[in-house]
Each structure stands twice: as C-alpha cells, then as structure tokens.
Image 1 (cartoon, rainbow, N blue to C red):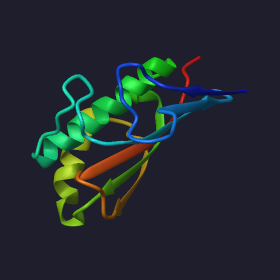
Image 2: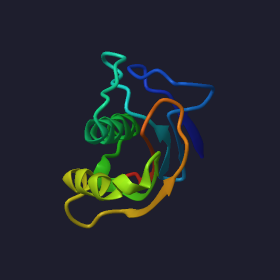
Image 3: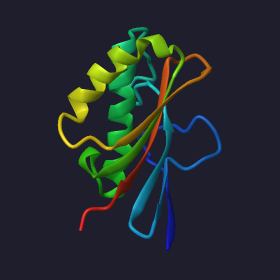
Image 4: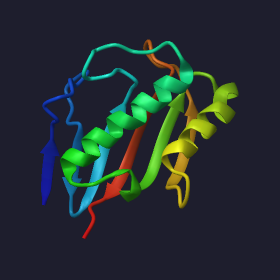
Length: 123
C-alpha cells in the first residue's frame, strides 16, 4: 500500500508529496525553515532549525505520527562548523532515545538547513 500525502496548510516548493506512507512507514520529504502560516523565514540559524523540525512535525501529524515515531533523520547544513549549535537545538526536540541521524554539509538555495525523516506509524 502506498499513499501520497499533501498537507493543505503547507505549500510545496516543487512537484513532490510532503510525505509518502508505505506499509506503515512515513517518508517525509526534505523540509526547510519557512513558517507555513506566515510564509516568512528567520535569519537566525537556531530558529531555522526549530521551524524546520516543526514543519516535519506538522507533516507527521497529518500522517498520524509524531516526532517520537521518527527512526531516521537526514539533515543538510550549509555550514558544518555550526554542527554543535545544530546538535543543541536538535536535543530540544529529541531529548532521549533520539533517532538514527546523518548530517551532511551542502549548498542550499536561500536556507541554512533542510531536514527529511522516516517514521513508523504508531500501532
């Protein structure tokens, strides 16, 4: 079974689904730090991380899951020297039993962070 999910309150930045649910697993597309309610983005790195994770959370909620259901995170940072700051903000959302994670340095278009994840639907 495969189901593509688009969240009405969020605008997709291209031709993709916000998530795809397949066999009880939620694959969330890469999200950036734009606040879907305002269309605005903070210049502050820590706030960009927080908003990006909140965007993941919104999509997971629409799929029937939450942050605690994430098993794998891939994060893309424009500046890997800021990894310690990223890690501290990340701990705010995943204080215990954090998911598996990969962090990669890359060039992003106008944002400092992008994150995607894989979660399991709760029983």
